[in-house]
Figure: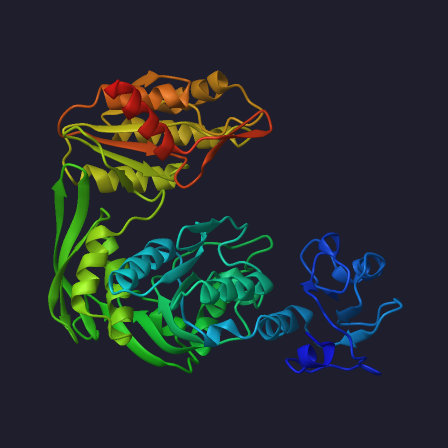
Length: 484
């Protein structure tokens, strides 16, 4: 793309703009390629302006900066390079958001689950749908791991282009408060913006200075979308939509909502834990959701309300929610026995308490929790995890997680410190594969077994090296060996 064409996307100052071809945009000098334009970004720990000369030495043919830099290529000055990068990226990739509908989800909790519910419903209606979020970038059979829930704006535009070129009609994106704060989703308009809930999180350090800033950043989404889908049961919803510029459609248990949930109940069969509820308001029907916990009614109702705005048929909503799976989030694994096996990412005391309390409500014959703890992390986390599992599970199977540079047996001893504060039963199996095998071989009818800690991860980190370890693959191998 010609530099002059690229710069039509932003306000800028430059003495002259030569007729240069730009092969790519780069904002990390280490990734510089000949013929690229280098964008100087200021971050919490570094300033790209200091690396402009290095980028030019590696072949950058133009530099986009907030202040003059001493290099022998054209320097384009603009007020905010991070915001400029968003618009430059949209221009560079041909404005992919114009080629598919983009749905953004913000909130403290529920973003990942709601995103996958949206995807399940849209694909049940025949619409190929991509997801950008905590799990990574997913479309079709492609899964790309990312470092952040909401990637950098250049990557967002690149992934949107890949999805559009692959035939996706929709992209559902988790939009974090930091992503909004750092302009990672600037440069286009969301068709829908979804709000799940708001509570204290991400305060301090390089994140948000206080709750007021956290809320202000969340609220930005509703000045960047055409229609907002809002949970009016959350006491903070009015602060979230303050200064909104979009149309609003509401959901909740509150009868004042446009879409109302009621009559929720837990449902269970071997291999299926979920919740059933009824919807009234703009639509009237009953839905079964294949993810346990009554709090998932909110996530499902959010997805239903959004899909109603998109005119998705009720039958697709019901089919999608009945079949939805979120990798590593209370994910059921099909088993031959009369018990339920789940994989979950719970890897600290708070998340373990949440998942075990949720599963306890289904009245299993036994609730079995297999878990370990990460090495080179505060020991107090291990004590707390042991105490939570000892208190809430009928049986704890203590094993390895990512031991990193610590001895697994030492980590297990720390977990037992917390376990011994309870009357909970436990066994120790340091090898995680063997622990999974034990859980399967010793399962009893009516059991709920949760493999906690790894979730969507597909590796184990030991002595600084990551080894392949996808629990789905491990379970399949164990079942195959048991058949033989």
